[in-house]
Image 1: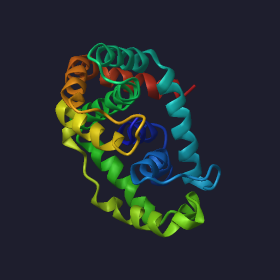
Image 2: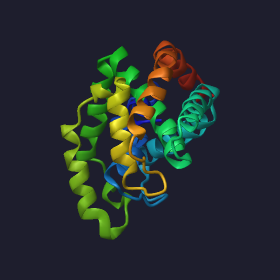
Image 3: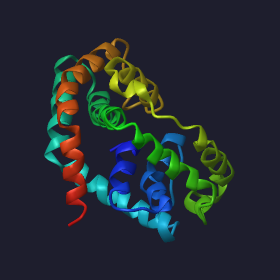
Image 4: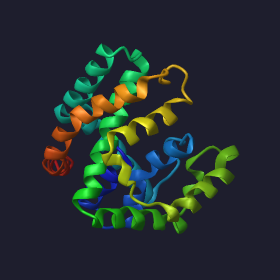
Length: 212
């Protein structure tokens, strides 16, 4: 699950912006190329991090996600995309398309994310979330969060495919080959109507599942 969905679901359970920040912090770290130190952050932000992992555990095993991921993966495999690139593109591509619907369906959700990110300026002990040698760059990364804007291109399968190409280029085992972008875009385009039609019901189901 990507950060927009994480914060949206966390906001249904928590009013505290610090908890909402924590719910997105692992994704914020991944986007910046940082490795978080497990158990390094306590308090409300730490509670949000724990909520993030609980959310992901439910999401990644939920039939809504696994069925759509498999559909995209199967189409990419049939089209000749390598296994690593196909699996990663199916996984992250579905997540990004879901976030595209999350933001498009309710513009106020981008304000939820912006509000959570603004809390990073006053979050206690957040610098210690990463190893000592990375903390200066981590602080710079956190300071840049105020520039975040909801990415409208998450509803564009071709743009998402290009984004996936850029992300995976840093991972040799997952990197796309020449000519893979149109194949990924086609597979995501086939999955998009189902994602768009069910996104809100699925979010409500996730909120309920995390209430149990």
